[in-house]
Structures are given as C-alpha cells and as structure tokens.
Image (tube, rainbow, N blue to C red; front, side, top):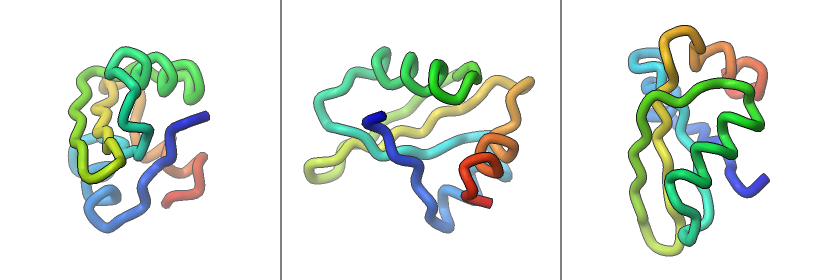
Length: 80
C-alpha cells in the first residue's frame, strides 16, 4: 500500500467533525488511483476527495459517504 494515514490533531478533528480521512501518498499518484486504492483496501466508499501537494508529498483528504463513518475506519487502524 502506498498510502499512509495521517495522525495529527487536525486529522482527528476532520474525522470527528466532517467524516474525512487524511492520508499521505506519493506525489505522482492521480486522484482516481488514490480513490480506488482507499476504497479497495478499507472496503468503504469515498464521496469527495481533495489533494494538497507540499514539498515532495501529496496529502489526500477523503470525505466518506454517510453510511461509512470515518471514526469506525480510524478505530480499526488504531488512530483513535
């Protein structure tokens, strides 16, 4: 897997308030590739995605569909 979940104060606030998971990934990956990888690996559905490039890294903010609570995924990953 080439995506890493982020565990920062901001990431935890986004999980709780907006149902958003944050990841760090390779700069070359496209949004479609990242979305497919997240959906396949975590068995969830992504509603919207935003990306931000900072230095050599790409940060991804994936808003999940309502029927997939981000807090449940974060708990399985041990982030919460």
